[in-house]
Image 1 (cartoon, one colour):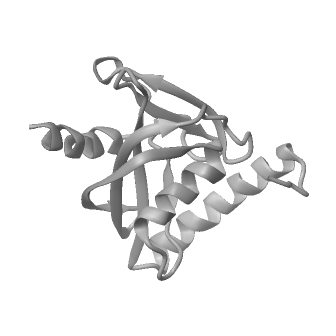
Image 2: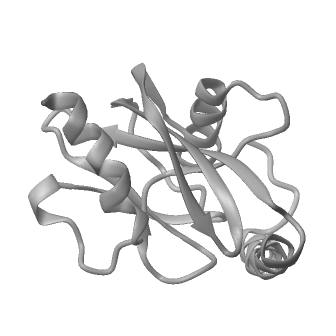
Amino acid sequence: MLHLIPAPLHRLMYRAGHGLRRLFLRHVAGEVHGCCIIGRDGEGRVLLVRHSYGPPVWALPGGGMRRSEDAGLAALRELREELDCTLAEPEFLGIQTNEFLGSTNHVRVFTGRVKGQPRPDMREVVDARYFALDDLPDNRSRTIDLRLRLLKDERN
């Protein structure tokens, strides 16, 4: 992907944008819609990312959906943009609704085997690693365990 802005400046812009987004969500937006991907490798490990903005925690890949965008296509777009990979046979697990910075966040959760080697874009995402489900990092987003419940429910 062609980037006209140098990566360090792009990361700075993400941090500033994140701050503005927090203000918008807290004071203006009532509802937001997004997607989340529980990407797995051949060993069943889960792909987690660290963003260049926000708290320094591990999170599941994903992001906001554009108006009228198909949720499955949004999930694949996010993986491609952030990690230059995709999902083989993506599967919809469900929708989870939670409070996010004063707004109601409706997240469509997908899973599947990651196809390709995840490569962080070094702009929005600065690190990506696979973790075993029983060895997730302590410094992880509070939503990871919530999202993973859908994966466990699917297996039962």
